[in-house]
Every structure is written in structure tokens, then in C-alpha cells.
Amino acid sequence: MTTQTIATTPFNDQKPGTSGLRKKVTTFQTAHYLENFVQSILNAANSIGATIVIGGDGRFYNDTAIQTIIKMCSANGVREVIIGQNGILSTPAASNLIRKHEAAGGFILSASHNPGGPNGDFGIKFNQANGGPAVEQLTEQFYNNSLNITEYRITDDPDIDLSEIGSAQSGHLNVTIIDAAADFVDLMSHLFDFDKIKNLFHSGSFRMRFDAMHAVTGPYAHALFEQIFGGLPHTVMNGTPLTDFGGGHPDPNQAHAKELIEILNSANAPCFGAASDGDGDRNLILGKHFYVSPSDSLAVIAANAYLIPGYSRGISGIARSMPTSQAADKVAEFLGVECYETPTGWKFFGNLLDDNKITLCGEESFGTGSDHVREKDGLWAVLFWLNLLAVKGESVQQIVEGHWKTFGRHYYTRHDYEAIPTESGNRIMQHLQDSLTTLPGQTIAGLAIESCDDFSYTDPVDNSVSEHQGIRILITGGSRIIFRLSGTGTEGATLRVYLERYEPNTAAVNQDVQVTLAKHIAAADEIARITELSGKSAPDVIT
Ligand code: VG1
Ligand code: CO
Image (cartoon, rainbow, N blue to C red; front, side):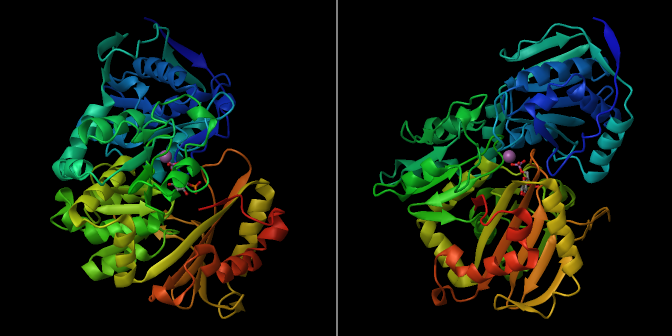
């Protein structure tokens, strides 16, 4: 083994976004690009003598990147790396392994739900010792290191065979390859009542479909829903992970999980439908002819947590990302616990979970989770719903409609304007900034604007401040319109518009969400001058 020190020059675009560094595969293939970022991370993380977890969602370039990271870990004095078999780990499974093995952190190779393949996207993020995404102070260090980097260290050892479970050696580095699904299934079996769920599957009337979208959850889903619970052989669809996700977007929402949604809307629909994304941290929940909005899902989960073994002692608090609907707030109020409003991105939940201020958290972007790991967890949410269906003996629709009756309903939609010129995105946000003082008191499209601000968050645990996290427009009666630019895209800018209307009495309004929110949609366009400044007359994706 020889360790080489390679001279390099910085790339100034290695700034991590909402969820790590995401770029086109072709960018990661640029000479020294990946290496610069990995060395910048290793320099900031306490990696000498440490254990580090490595795994990815199996997309194109996953194996190449993992072999590079192994050699760099070896050259940088890491003691042991723990890797999922074939280099594959779902994001929540990686989070679990970091915690379980008290690792110093982990490299997660994923661009989540973004398309894969040689012309698709790739991504890398570093999770810290608590299993959660690196906090902002740390990602700032990664970025600053990447701006000043002059060299990186790598060995010239041969590649490791990642297909064999067991131990191997890369120079002085111990490489442990593990069965990723086993640990994860074990963790789930301690949170949920597997026997009750099995009985549900064997009751004769229950059928479900799970869409793994050719991504990382396929093997976990086959094990859980078919082998353990005894679901029919076709319970899991698209269950074989592919490096390009079969050419699709592994994004479990109305735009990209169309096949599953059609099945759940068909005459002979199963009782329950669910899907997860590229790296297994997102979830979509469907009932027969019924869609559950992620914000509602968080609220329902919180309201019913006491029925689930892992949460039967009650929850300490809830957190939701700022654009997530306020449905969870109503539940927190009812339970007498705190509801925290954090900026978008799972890293902001970490301190609250570590400090036991919250047990549950979620985002409108199909992310839900708890203190069992430090990432959102797609299969966890699906198991939670299955356990709930088994305990309550009601349909998904009955559970959600019952919830609305008790707490009122937060009609909710998100409109995305994708890949607009960066310049247009910035102009829209600047225009909104400039309007903050003049908007309050105005009535726009029939909606009375009460107040507005540029969301800033002070972490209650470490007092760190994160500014400019989105523009919030608050409307009389508890409705909101929120604007922010995406931090995960790889082309131009993506404007996200979040629209929410609260109705205490759901019988009083039109049930169609887009119709119910028509005034909010019109007001958003007028306030942000979207059509004029983006050049688009309609959003690209509506969820
Ligand atoms: C999006 C979502 C955000 C989520 C992030 C990472 O970020 O809106 O809620 O935390 O993706 O999720 P943005 O900045 O594009 O809005 V994942 O499944 O991509 O790790
Ligand atoms: Co994801």
C-alpha cells in the first residue's frame, strides 16, 4: 500500500445545499471533484482512528465513489468503515448504523429522488455522530475547506469486493460489509406490533401495494411486506433497485408515482398504498381512492402515537419544517406539548431530537420520522400507518376524515416552478423581500394579509441562527402562503410556493384542494409576480 498526496485546486461550487452536495454525475466525474469534497469533509470531521459508515442509494456512480472514499479513508487514518452489501444503504438505515456502531459519521451517496443514470444526478452528504445530517456549522467548514484545498490523500490499493458480507482489509483500514436490511428490520420490530400487522395481512380483506420505484427500499420492502407479514407476491412493485431507477424520478408524489396512484384509484383498489423515494427516506401514503397529504400524515401520526408500541408512553413534542401545514400544531396544542417550526431540511430536527424536545417530526415534502434515527424514514412511516390500520380497524380515509372532524382541516398544496433561470428566481425572492413592509394590511385576491416575514430560526439547543429560510405570508384565519427557492436542484432555480388554508368546519368548503385554494394561488402569483418574472404561466409540479 502506498498513500499518495495529490495536488489539487479548489472548485468553488462545492457548497452543500438542503441535503448535501448534489450535482450532475458528469460534474462528479470531473478530475479531483469528488476527492476534493471528501478530503474537505475528512479534514473537518474527527476521522483519524474513527469508524465511518458508507452507503448509497445504488444509483449510477455509487460504486465508483465508494471505492474512492474507501481509499481516502484509508489514507486519512480512519480505523474502520462499515458498508452496506453492494454499497447500498437507505438513508435511514445508514443513520441507524452510525448510531448503533457509535461511528464518527457516515458518507451517504444519494441525490434522493432526483433522476439517476450517467446523465442524471449524484450526491454526497456527511452525517455526523448522532446519525443526522451535518449541522450548518459543519457544512460551512466542509465548504470553506473545499475553497482552500491544495491536496488530498488516497491509497493505490485495489478495489474491495462489496458483494461479500464479512471483513476485508484496505491497507490498514478494516472494511466491514454488512446485511443492511437485517439491522433495520430489527429496529422496526421493536417499534411496531409486527404480530398485529401480520394478522391484518392474514385477515383476508386486506391488500396493499408498495412502490419501491426501482430504488433502495425494494429489498427491505420485499422482506417486510411479503416475507414477514405474508403479503401477496405482487405487494411490492418496482422492487429491484436499478442504477437509473428505470429511467424515472424515484419521487413518491402525485407527479411521479402515477402508476401506484392509478392502482389505488381503480375499481378493484387495494386498501392501502405506499411508496418511497430513491434513498428510502420519503413516503407517500394512500388509501383506497384517497390521498393523504404529508402534513396531515404527520398530524395523524402524532395524534395516534399512543396506540403504537414504540410511542405508547406519549410524545415529548413535535417539530415540522416551516412550510409544512399547521395541522401538527393543532395536535400538539391538544396534547399539551410543544410544536417547533424549523427551516426546511432534516438537519434542523437533530438537536431537538437529541435533547428530547421532540419525538416526532416531519416535512410537507413527504418526509416523516421520529427519534429512532436522525433522518426521515419512509418505511417507518408506512409501518406506522400499517400498525395504525391494524389497531383501529378503520380505513385510511376514515382515519383522516375523523382527524379533520376533530382538529379541522388544513387544505394544502405545493406548486413548484422548476429550472427557471437563476436570475429570475433571485428576482422573485428580491421582489418579495422588498414587499415585506408594504404587504401587511393589503387585501389581495380577496385575502387579507395580516403579516409577513423572512423566516429566521434560532435553534433552541445551541442558539445558532439560520436566516433567510423563506418568505412567510400570514393571512387572516390561519391561512399561509410561503415562498422559497429549492436547495436540492441541479439546474437553474426552482421556486416552491406552499399554499395552506385552514377550515375548522370541513363540510363548508369545496373538497377539491386546488379549487379550495384558488384565491391563495391567485394571490401568490400577484404577490410574487411569478408568471411575469418566471415566464411560466403554470407550475411544473403540483403536490
Ligand atoms: C427538498 C424538500 C425538503 C427536504 C429536502 C431533502 O429540499 O423540500 O423538505 O428536506 O428536499 O429531501 P428543497 O431545498 O429542494 O426544497 V431528500 O428525500 O431529497 O433527502
Ligand atoms: Co430522499
